[in-house]
Length: 283
Image (cartoon, rainbow, N blue to C red; front, side, top):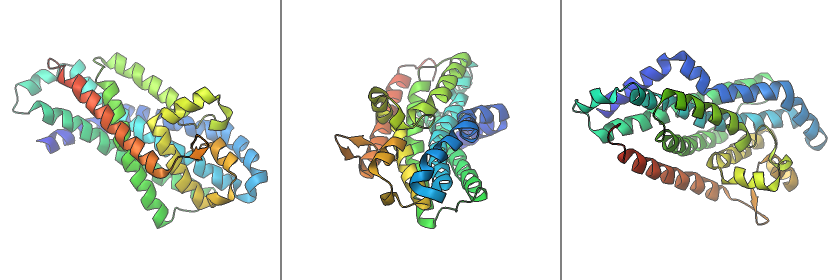
């Protein structure tokens, strides 16, 4: 039954071309800002430090951020099916069917995760194609494996966060507003529009608290290391670009990053389940 519900949700998502497009709006905006404004500035900034590898290095930096953002914006778009079902009173049809309530909720969550994985992997492929066309290199097998693993844990955390947010939403207008806010803020919260080092310390703390920024950090480490081994870069430079997060004078380890993503995902899911369980009239 869950598989049939997932199939139905996925068909509805991919059939709505506008929904797919707008779920990628944040990614499109980031790429546009990079191509028109940020790219040249960042390449000029790093050229004296890393020489001819500066363009490849910064393309890897921005594309790592783009992949990270995709995991949350596409999950957000996929959860639009749940909001639509609630807003259009389709839940009444489900209530008179043999479908159990937990099966319905789980189908929304799993569908969002599948959408997030598919779209994030597609973004990865397009990012690698762009880097290659611009003179960079395709990720090695080892790096590609790491990136795919990071996408998986990022989608888990992102879908949990979005599920929690969507559990408060009952109308399509509210969903549209929430999606616009998420799409606008996500570039700042992952340290893409403005490098971390250019932000006030208070804002830096907020970014470090935001779970998805930890995904961006690890993706940057893997992808940028393909352009130039990170040990050749000064610590100050890595902190400035958000390649490493520093707390108490020490870099946060990847184990902590992964644990933070996983634990925050579990917490978000638990909160969402509690909220949804109290809305028996809707789900």
